[in-house]
Amino acid sequence: MAPTIPKEQWAQVIEKTGGPVDYKKIPVPTPASDEVLVNIKFSGVCHTDLHALNGDWPLPTKLPLVGGHEGAGVVVSRGELVKDVEIGDHVGVKWLNGSCLSCEFCQQSDEPLCPKPLLSGYTVDGTFQEYCIAKAAHVARIPKEVPLDAIAPVLCAGITVYKGLKESGVKPGQWVAIVGAGGGLGSLAQQYARAMGLRVIGIDTGDAKKKMCLEQLGSEAFVDFATSKNLVKDVQAATPDGLGPHAVILVAVNEKPFQQAAEYVRPRGTVVCIGLPAGAYLRAPVFESVIKMITIKGSYVGNRKDSAEAIEFFARGLIKAPFQVVGLSELQMVYDKMQKGEIAGRYVLDTSK
Ligand code: 8ID
Ligand code: ZN
Image 1 (tube, rainbow, N blue to C red):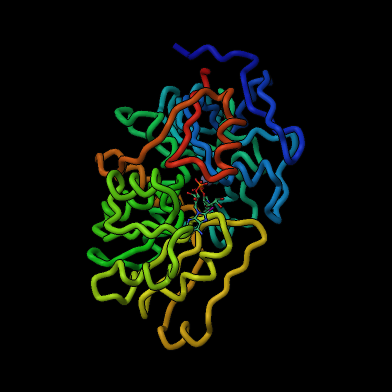
Image 2 (tube, rainbow, N blue to C red):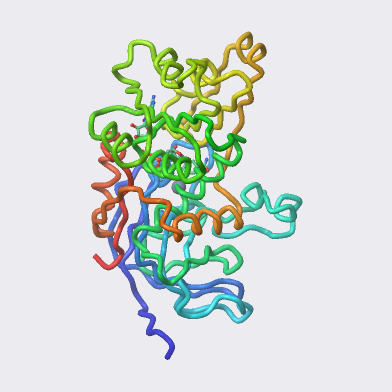
């Protein structure tokens, strides 16, 4: 029996850049021929959603905007060209809502680099609503036994850090520093790193995040960036030979660590930039970069295969990161906490509340 789809739904809407978000009723959209309509059950709140609200990136959002791009839910209707996604399937709506599928980048499975991307919760309405549209070719497949609340943060944070770890080229047994370890991406990065056989140094601040990283997420060492007197030395000292981590995964929302990582990464090591602090620049000493032969690179979400792999790690029970569920109506509270750096792990919104 086809599910009943209401005409109206609850959503969190940004009317103007800077906010606040407005919790109100809006029409339920209708999918085009190549799209599906997903009844979003849970959506994670990523710091990218806060960048969208604040308008602090050099890329304008649509307005009014429904944010959100970590949506897990159930397909309730589909366009007439959609053949391989069924009504009732569990799917994830990711940051990359759609891409052209024919450019050079889409052809080589680098679809996040498509010059004409549709970005959920940024250039198209996202997952902070009960019913969300997504291109059928891009929805992530979620096995039915996987809980939709816990998988939600994987749909951006998990996929992104898993991809970043692969891009770093580190091998099992090697050390990786996760900078911003206490946040949404950082907490999942530790779990993926452990599942991939890596040894982890967490970098963030405060006792709650320290405890979470060391006791729950698998970091073997923790460096508090706010209290460390010599961060570079402390990070290097956390590896047994004192030469520093083989890779650094930067997921902080602050420019400074992007200018420090090259100093403590091991010779031949790789610095992977993922966090997107507003107006920030990379900086590295030329002398050390050259004589240590280091690599500095960016990493941006993941393609459909990376997404499927990241979900499979989760489905196998290898990824357990803390999250707190609150109602969709409480999004502004989540933004306020995120702005102050007070969130350990991820908040997930229940769209029915
Ligand atoms: O594809 C991508 N590249 C991608 C995908 C998804 C998200 C990029 N992002 C970007 C987001 O837009 C955001 O800029 O990654 C960044 C992190 O997102 P998040 O994990 O959702 O943010 P959070 O939960 O607020 O965590 C940030 C953590 O960084 C710590 C904070 O304490 C917090 O725990 N942090 C800060 I701010 N400064 C730090 C520093 N100097 C720091 N940790 C270590 N050193
Ligand atoms: Zn995100």
